[in-house]
Length: 235
Ligand SMILES: NC(=O)c1ccc[n+]([C@@H]2O[C@H](COP(=O)([O-])OP(=O)(O)OC[C@H]3O[C@@H](n4cnc5c(N)ncnc54)[C@H](OP(=O)(O)O)[C@@H]3O)[C@@H](O)[C@H]2O)c1
Image (cartoon, rainbow, N blue to C red):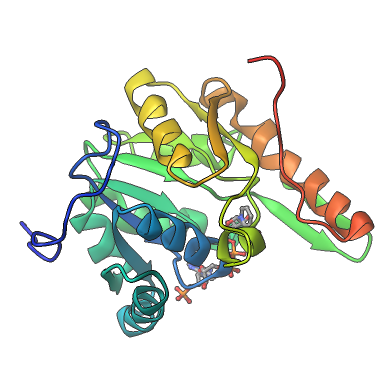
């Protein structure tokens, strides 16, 4: 289906790999999805915000539109995935498999960016969950054989993404995936957030370490009262 919702919006300076592409953020009502949607909207991208409840998505889209001065559209997750060219998964691990199965029929040929960290939170801290497929990214790719799944945005802080006092977020976003054109595009997407550098970090079989490392960052945040991120040196 063709959508014309953004047709009369001015195109801002978008890398050619992203030009004309609509970005869906599924789970966009949570802090991480909201923060990513906010930053992509501020960068001039066309953003569709997804939720299990289309009304809730529209409320958040309206809030972000008021904050960013950009039009965002809120839809239920499946509709947002169907209308977008690039689909971000930004839900808790508990909802990952179900959501991936729900969108399978609408993401063929698209890039799906998996931002989900399989983590468990206990009284002694946060630890990675061992995923039988290897990682969230590999689980998604197995369930979405017609899509290209890329892992990214696992370690960037929702607090900083949402904080107007931090126009720039000084961090690297590690990007994993098997298809060069797709990882290049997601690196460009990351780079649209001021301060962020997208860094290629290996194939899908390297996704587990990136997802799991978020548990280390959460431990750091608790100890140092911080919003820690990653910076890779000498590349
Ligand atoms: N928070 C961070 O700083 C951060 C940083 C890096 C990566 N991440 C990753 O980003 C993902 C989202 O994080 P978050 O803190 O934003 O999570 P969250 O607030 O717990 O959930 C995000 C949204 O997902 C939807 N959701 C909740 N449970 C769901 C389920 N069982 N099935 C489907 N949808 C569900 C909810 O939206 P609706 O009810 O509207 O559908 C919710 O607003 C996680 O995998 C996390 O590891 C988070």
